[in-house]
Length: 295
Image (cartoon, rainbow, N blue to C red; front, side, top):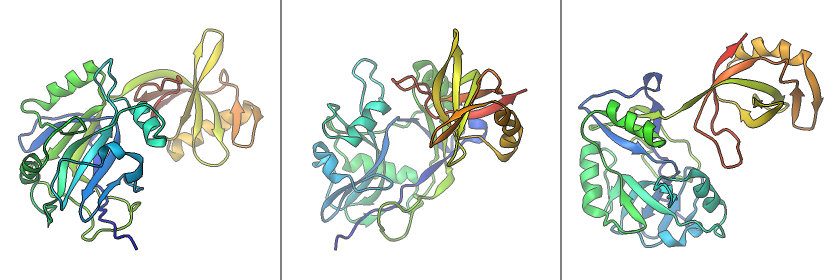
């Protein structure tokens, strides 16, 4: 029986109104656009996402520059050579297939075990010192930097550069997780000690083009010339009150259906404002969140 040294990663909450703030009690770090990864270099090496042991998928990460008995919390990323920014689509493609020709790297931002000692109850500022002391950076592994100065000004730079966002962490925060290791897939603890501020774009006049038969997702699209371009599905931000507003209009404008969706006439449907994280190369909107329905 394999003994996993997996601890559910500590999770972020949204900052109030998704707005940055300046406070000397907090560290500010870039939020990297990738996949959460625990590198556990205990009796054996294991690489974990929140839900899976993915050790076999990333042989290029099998020699982490950390001591035996150390567990680090990282972001798995693929860097776009043209922009120097993390490319989430490329990272996801590499995650799903070793045949995808993308080079992955891991950027470490915390440490759970240090040379055999559980350090999760130490304050973050001490853990970062241990991480700096133990991890020797190379082409595959790096450390996230903490920024001095104004987090508000830093976020403006992040927005201008088109990066994912900002993380604000209390300097005295402990690493909140389970006391004992467990199987991957156990949900982590979300806490206001760690906050995220995401760089959202806002899109107006997004049309509802249908709804799922199986869950609460809506099909959305945007008018382009004399047709409506599909933008994918939206689930985030939709409340019961929103569904009550939209339901009568959608029922009056049904045009067809298949096994998964009911399609409505977008011209007759309500429009809405949506915040989102840009677009995939396919043209679909990434992580749309309903902001407002327009009558």
